[in-house]
Image (cartoon, rainbow, N blue to C red; front, side, top):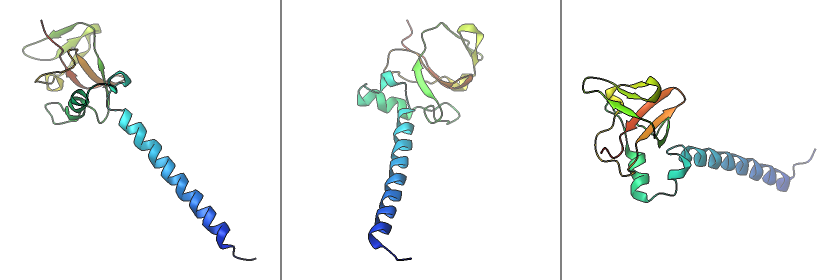
Length: 123
């Protein structure tokens, strides 16, 4: 059995290229998880707003969930949870304070698990 340096180099090169490709794929997928695709083309100001949001407990909204527009009705209770269509209750700590540059209510959730809610323009 002979040692072929060129063959060993090619095998190492392709193994390294495969690892780099896998890392690049996961990096790109994680970057897309911060907001729904419709917001990916928004201005850097709005993209930055999405990336910086966290609820009153300090939990980041975008680390675990996608933010998407919420177009249903919302009931704000002074002494407790926010109630969304269908009776889903969100604890007060999930409701973000401060300006929302999208002009729409945004709800960060994955399936049945909610993370944050930003009220839109209230009129």
